[in-house]
Image (cartoon, rainbow, N blue to C red; front, side, top):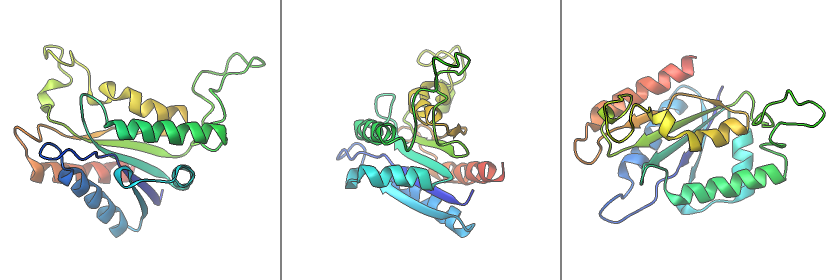
Length: 198
């Protein structure tokens, strides 16, 4: 694993979410990975992209990281548009996924096994206003015991459907009401180190 593709999914909202933290997390990941000898490529969705180039970046990469803020319990709409365009074109061209994996000739093949990104890994890195305590605790009102990975299954499922291995996500929590950015950066470096050593 020596090629990393980072997608910055941030969407600018003046006075509310201007993207500084997500840009910082992208820079930290790229700098750390490049210092370890990894080649990196970056797409900043807000700046525009070419769909076919994005397919090629996915095929090129060993590790794909999406860096995103959480807006209304999901990624910004520009990321959903990006994913719809890239994965649909990747299906049509047969580059990212051939089909859903099932065949009439072999009913034992399971749904979601037609991807072509086998051997690649995918990681989601998020910035939340939600506190860490809101997750993995059935006594918490909002998520009722669900993890961040449970909440974001709609994002990671696209990559799993295409054959990539899904890695544990990373989150910066409580970034508006109780930020601890210095510790978040330290934890992020540790998280990246741990996934690179696996």
